[in-house]
Length: 130
Image 1 (cartoon, rainbow, N blue to C red):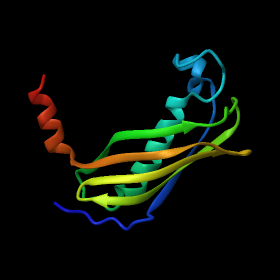
Image 2 (image 1 turned 45 degrees about the vertical axis):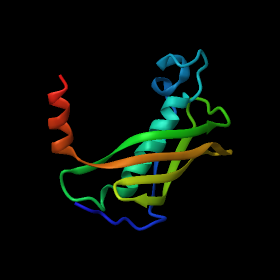
Image 3 (image 1 turned 180 degrees about the horizontal axis):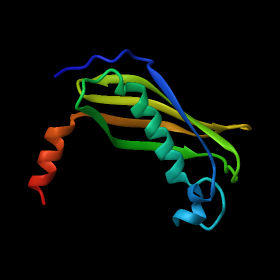
């Protein structure tokens, strides 16, 4: 099945930084600030949201690559919003520009790639590898 998704399709996701999202809590550092892996997850979620409505039932996307800079720390209690914008589609391969912001501006940015999959077929193939 082929899906044509309009370029510049975008979406955003927001969180309030809480202890469970900090580098100290998840073990990627020892400081109580938003962890880089959590910022990246927020960016990936925004990318998923941007394109999911263009896909048929039973289809979704999987992240395949991230190239992200975490530019500035965000403390607990601050709101962070990530935005993803589709900039390229080649068949089932999708590429996004992503950025995350808090109330002081950009905290991270970069690119993210995802791939469109048939969820049932993907799950069946995973079962074969067990």
